[in-house]
Image 1: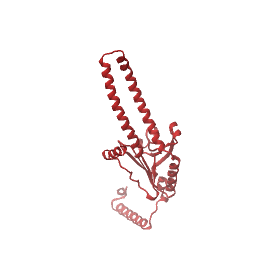
Image 2 (image 1 turned 180 degrees about the vertical axis):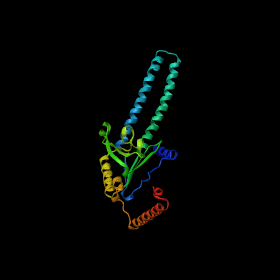
Image 3 (image 1 turned 180 degrees about the horizontal axis):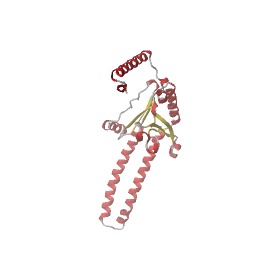
Image 4 (image 1 turned 120 degrees about the horizontal axis):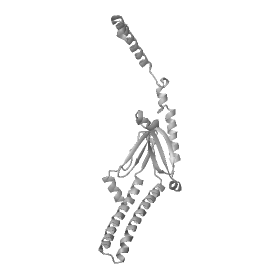
Length: 253
């Protein structure tokens, strides 16, 4: 039954079955998935929500049930019937929610190449983000109490916001960072080390280091281009001298 539900969701919601790899070398591409314990974590959250729903219906049921036992009018019985129908639909919704939890777990992908990474998650609204290593500012790992118990963690990758001014620095001059998360992985340290290793490789190769690219020594100029630039400069100086002689020095200012 779940297989039919998954196929229906893939067709109706147009959920991609597999993510497209981001730019990079296919031989160095690594695909990471959320850990099985993350599915247990999602199940626990679902169970807590369902428990809260059952408790709410139970509280609403007690009053009319006591009134009906004491010989109250038919309004109490009508209320119980309405509540029973509502509880039935809530139970159906809970089962659908349970299937969505499993589908959300299965459709969560984390792809890392030698140049970038891609995170895809979501069912009703598919969220996909691609980050190049040249834009990464920080990599951190976080764990809550339940996550520590289950041996999983969230890995967060922060990137600098584009543009300048307030949009780039945010309020009070603080950097405006965008982030993506590898949620519920049991090898967060391994993924972090892989990213740091590839960041070092990019830095060693001179890619992604904006300071080096900005210096003249990092720019390779061919002899032909240099000769052409010198010729243009000579022609510009000749034109300037000719205009100065013909129209006076003020014409060149």
